[in-house]
Length: 250
Ligand code: NDP
Image (cartoon, rainbow, N blue to C red):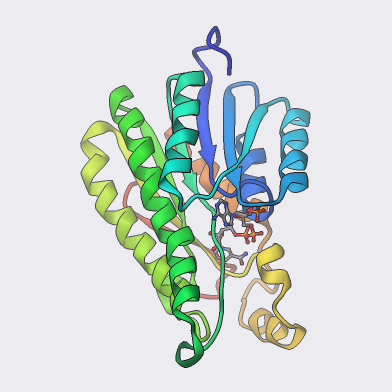
């Protein structure tokens, strides 16, 4: 968005270089939105996201910046504010896994997962909420996980971070409701992305056997719901956790 196009909405997506984050960028891409996304290291994938957004008639800016680094995120949000003067939608999507059974889990793996999946969302929510409150409108969408609701062996750190994200969602929804800002969480089940590509074939077959719809989810299955939650159709929905999982958790 340029300064002479004040009608464009500003949409921020964390972790937009690949997977669900890229699908989110594409779901929001269009002439009426200016998209900003960050990523941690995947420069070529981020460029591809930018190309795809362009091809969809939109415009995006991708920045390599750690979502858990408060100074880096402050600089990212300041740039967005300087360039557009508004923040309409924030999707806290960046996430990592560092799986192992709890008795073998390193504290550093616990910390890394908490930092990216939970602290990163807190930092971005704090930074975005100021701009949203100013304009009395906003949509914050947190990508949690079925693991944050049901738990998952080997993912104590990830499940705890994603459960924490649900608590963050509900508290911030209550804090910001009077300013016409909604805050919701999406809990995907098993979605076909780089994150799940490393699961071994036997485990994948077990997971699929427990999905009533009989297939893994696609990133677009998640992105479509985020687009709906950011729309006027979802104006009366806040503080909710919406599941996108093919029925694997009912
Ligand atoms: P991917 O691993 O495919 O992509 C993750 C994205 O997050 C990448 O763009 C990555 O950047 C970015 N990222 C990771 N760490 C940081 C960081 N410190 N700072 C900024 N960006 C970062 O994951 P998915 O697309 O599968 O997952 C997206 C979200 O959905 C995550 O929160 C995940 O937990 C959640 N989720 C995923 C499910 C699944 O089955 N795939 C199920 C349930 C929830 P880079 O490309 O540079 O590495």
